Length: 155
Image (cartoon, rainbow, N blue to C red):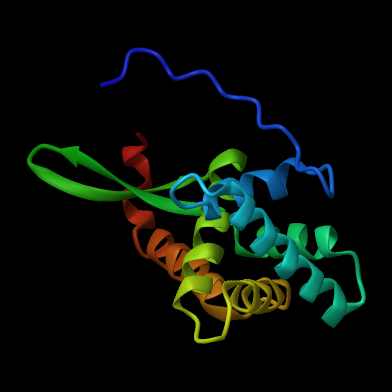
């Protein structure tokens, strides 16, 4: 097991919206160090979101991330040769991380023209409490609810 938790790194806010959440999203979308490409894709997606909703894109993204973020998840715990799936509350940092990961993954799985189109569609679906990323959250909550009997094995 790890002796010390690694210290948290400060993320610089993005240039256009001056928002740390968008900067974290850009870093998660980035592949092979091509940050300018990831930045343009995210900004294009946010422009499409703002165009379609008529609301501030940052507020829509924040609400979508809140809608997708799980409250409970299961973690495996080994007790006497048996492995139990123990439901635990999700910390706010992990909630945001999982929400971003699920939105990006379900955006990649969508059919569409460009990644910006797919990302905008998934953000709008998450904002409306629909789509694959919200389904993923519901599955996680169902799993935690089904294993509630093992909650006394807290990690």
